[in-house]
Image (cartoon, rainbow, N blue to C red; front, side, top):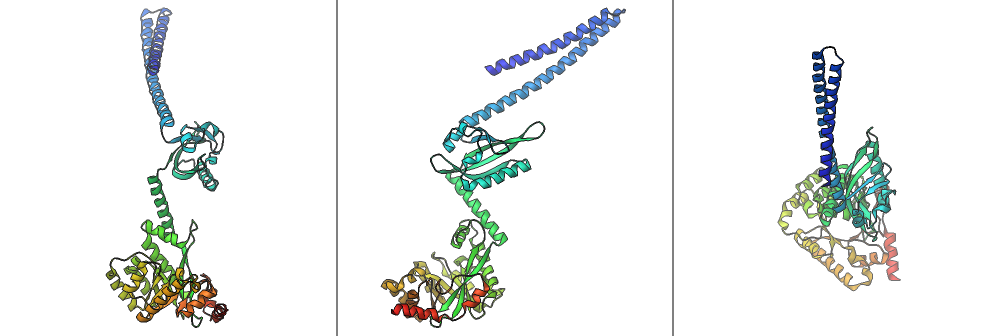
Length: 458
């Protein structure tokens, strides 16, 4: 009703303005005619005045119509924005170029648990945890510098209940008539579990894509030592990542599998390891971790064929603990790989049923006992019995047993007493990227073996 009244007032004003201009034109003409000696000339001037007044009045009418339409559109936009700010689930807010809040809608009560009036005049960054404020400040500085807004940025925001909420925000700049930046108007929405999961997967995929494209990984090597002589007989290649976030390699490979990049990352890790292995001492083998999917890949055969080290120095270590449904799929690639001199190892034997199935069906040349079996083996009869059973099995099938995770002298002594062929672990050598360390690692380690014997015998 108020809007209809306003429109009637505007329309009346337009009519009055147009009529006033027309009357002014007619009056001007009549006055001119009275001052003229010739009646005809006066009449012509009256008509001309009326015509000019009508044209000006029409122009006033047209300008008034357009102004009324623009006013109506502005009122509609303001009403809709007010409605969205008052009833919607998206937070509407404004900041100046320094990040000081100049407006915040009532949704802040629900989203952050705060009274929006308490945030006015404060830095918007107080709504973010300290570990995310630096990134937010950098993004605002970039937006101010470029005079552009932002779209779909995600942050963890603080709530007064002590928790955190994942939110997504977009913003646009607003400027004065001279084009000077006044600040930004933005909206923020809280992400639901489905959106958050998609966001997490997209972020993970983006990080891994960067790792793959920029090759942000390297290889370190851990020595594998012959228990009888203490001589290093090989090295296991272990992947390390130089990308953010800082997390273990197992986590990187698990995330790659989760977003469909597992095979690509696995192949890159193998390629990187084989290239780095040419700097190792030439007397031993190199054990490289692969998943079942990579082991079946024709690309792996190509990597071995073009590797800078001989195939008979390469051991492919099957690392995955999941069950394989069809072992026939390994037959052809394994035949090709073994024809090149490559040998096979099954990792983490004893850690699960899948590893024993791998051993029975793939007949590996090496069986690596899981570190869970080796830890404290000198004091645990059950661990010793399981390790002894694997040793007996290996003698029947002609495989070499390697004990993983040997960290104490008593463990090493018991490994030797059980007849286990080789061992690796921190006691015998830590993973290293230093070629000089690799060179030292092939020196005999009988001193450690003798120390282990003395500890066990005491």
